[in-house]
Image (cartoon, rainbow, N blue to C red; front, side, top):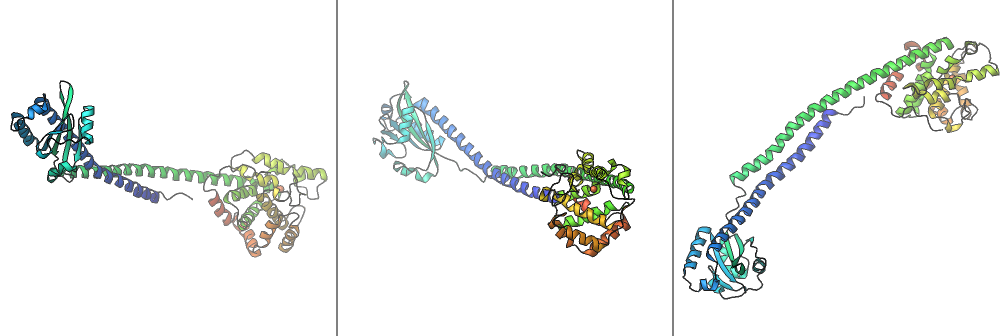
Length: 450
Ligand SMILES: [Fe+2]
């Protein structure tokens, strides 16, 4: 029985899916704290801008230069307080011409113009504030470098609806804390949750799979039982016909066993072996339509009687074709009296135009007929039968099939016939039928293309 190894398949699935889930969990565990930090930075930026806007809206709503004309005036005091409470390290005010009019951290910059400051120009040009994480890399920010990572903000200053300048702020960024306890808890949860879900769903999947496999096994057993019953029915039918024809019940088992042996020597595909076995059993089923007066006539047949006798192949074909399972034997039933040289019947096919299964069976059928007693003849000896087969190679029989037959061990053939007489069926036939009908044969009834 060729079924897949379900436990091994499940183990393989578990290994692969677990590895995939683990990769996903690790990715999630790493990315979650990072995403939380990205979110925290965005919130910090938003919060900083909010603070700056509030302060600027309250304090810088008139002429900047005039406001700053007195160095220790009230505005400067308020800026100092604002910086202290807001964790700022620089508060720089620019006028519309990109000139520094105030700098808390670097007063030497006051009066200097920086027309190439891109962020400044953009803030004053668009009226939109900008933020970015900065390490005080600009030359004019050298004095800020000791404060670590800073948040740089450019906020345009409006007066009567006009942009009159901008404020540049630098605020300390608190430590990101990627390895904070909260982040570690999130990472652990992100790692464990997919793995726990995997284990749970794998359990469900395994249960469903095993039920499916069990159903498959039951189905296979039912199929095997059906095949066994069908084969037994065929054998009974054929034995009944043989009793009427030859008075014995051994011809069909002899030819089936010998055909299997020869088919194995010729390395037949399982599908062809199935066709050969069923065809060998049913090859003369069409004789049911031949009158007893002809079928059982002890002497030679007249031409007309012979013509009627030869119709047994087409009658047999009509019986088996289109019938599930029986139709497997159609090639053998229809063509087992064709000859390699084209002088056979019913169609006069020659050479490889005759299906291989029919060519194999033609030889086996003749050999067994020679070795058997019939109403019109005594059995030939083994040697006489053997010699007739050899002489028929290339004329009656396919030379390749004849060569394979003549290469068989003579004693093996004799033993094979003895075993059939002793047991009724050869073990070889039991083994082969058990193997070839292990699973449904697809397109089994399509005749070989002629
Ligand atoms: Fe026949």
